[in-house]
Image (cartoon, rainbow, N blue to C red):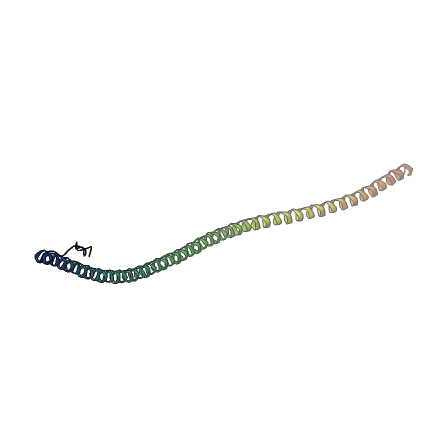
Amino acid sequence: IQSSGINAEWPLRPGKEVEQFRSEYRNKVMQLENNCKTLERRTQQLSEENARIRDQRDRQGHEYKNLQQQNLANLKLEYEKKLQRLEKTKTEEIARLIHDHEMTQQNLLDETSATMTRMEQEYKKHAETMGDFLKEQEEKHKKLREENEETMTAKRISEEKCKELEVELNTLNTQLKLSEKRKKYRPATLR
């Protein structure tokens, strides 16, 4: 056997040496067997430790996966809450903007209404003033027309009187001429 250091071709040595070699051989075999057992135990321990580490890794992987899912679920809930808050804020902002818009429209309507009321009052005052002015002008026009009619009537009457007077004057002139002619032709005795 090569590994024990004993060569089978060697001649047998005296008993003590052979015994010593056998003893060394047995010790080495036992030592090798012990080493094998130790290695087997160590291999067994390493396999068990490897299995334990795998189980632990698997458990940690599952725990990590569960933790990751929980974190994902928590993040999802957190983002949903943020989204709800944002939607609520957005809804409130829209409601505020609508309210502000309605208030602005109402203020514009109130201002327009006040302006219209003021303009209507000014128009009424102006219309009353114009109405009074127009009445005054109509009265003046009526008065002037009446005065004109009176003047025209007076003119007509004057023209008629003038014509009557002319006729009368013509008549008187004619009578005067006749009377002068008569006086001329009348005998002096009658005179």
